[in-house]
Image (cartoon, rainbow, N blue to C red):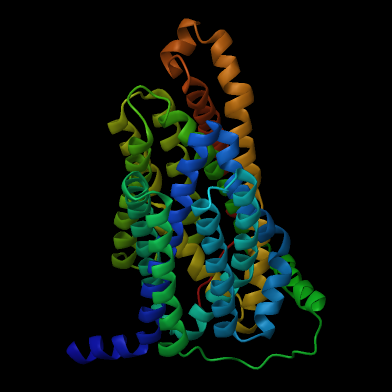
Length: 430
């Protein structure tokens, strides 16, 4: 048993270094993003304005992912990741300089977030392929659970650390932590990680490579259906993210600190879910697991938050809604890694990113717009009706509660309809 554990550590050495240091860097970036959201809400008081900050990150990601993935398959993964990290940290430093000079404005954040999003567009498929290249196939489910675990820890820690640091040290301290985490990840990737490269035909045009990724998805309808299903899930989830600050912050029992605690509960749930993934055996039907876990998540969290007025219930709702997300993510990850040939993964993952994540900026916009311009005005005018008052409360924030109810209904219908469609496909794991 001891020899088995030692062999496992040796086989996964590069993964453990890359996973741990990149997780630290992601924590630093997430802390900055959350702190900037707090800063922006203080300046504008608008759910749509804070949502637009994230939209600017995702817009280039969605628009350019197909071509970025084709480039990923042609170029060195390690150099690509290092270059993108450098551009991202430069954007963070520019925010720091503008803030120190008292010149930081909302439009600056939008532009810099768009540039950072463009760098992430190239880095993300390179990172996905790098993970495939350094992880032996027998460890896919276990490492997927560990990656979910790190994402969960980031979800827990980033709002708590960001809220605390923003209160006591301001953006100066937040950005200093972000830059420090970048240095750790950059040095580890540059000097301590070896990523094997496979030969690719670099004479082939980026457009043709992108077409190959699209052709693969067209020829594999089950994978395409799963990706489009996840795009619907992301639409609901991103609209929820845009709605949550407008629900928690103005509530008499809410505020910025409560928002940080409620947000971190999703990370607690994902840690539990990640431990479940690492411990459970391979399921008989990975496809069924994916849509049933999402039905449970979307069909509980939104309704619980919509109808409750207590922070404790908000936290419980977050935990219920997120505990099975790592289970879904791990099963989807195994399906993609085993079904897509390694030499095609960069371009196929990039196409996946476009189709799966294009709904995130849409959801953020729709969520913010609906809260500010539809639901809150509606509740302001008709909120005195007894049934609306009982269900969603009164005052600012009641419109956000109404929006969460709408999201709960929409998410449940999405899962039920897609589940029926996916039943005709059979995934056979190699």
